[in-house]
Image 1 (cartoon, rainbow, N blue to C red):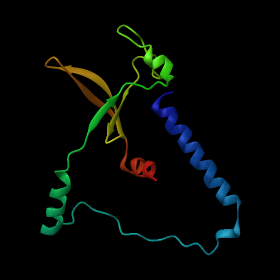
Image 2 (cartoon, rainbow, N blue to C red):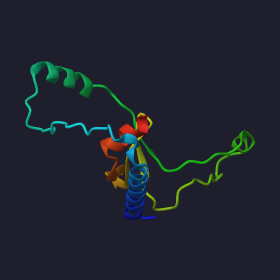
Image 3 (cartoon, one colour):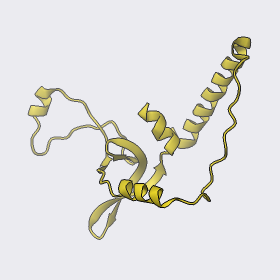
Length: 135
């Protein structure tokens, strides 16, 4: 399934939900839409806010890349030795998951830079999606 197909499925599900809510009719007639001010990047940051932001920016986090996962019994785990192969739930060539403190934030592909492994981010999870996953 491509990323575009996933978005089409998501859009179709959202449209279906909107239709279902519209068909429910007058149950929510007294609901009003909240008018919110548009957020802008032009607002200056106060010195106090800058100090708080600097404190947060210095917090260390753990970033890891996940190739795939597998579940095996303890019996099979104890039988693993050098040369054993564990089948993962990913297809070869599929993007790796990039996790920060165990939370998925992006997908990427492996690269080699100066004889060391690295990862090139191919898809970054939006902040809205990350916040939804926290709930």
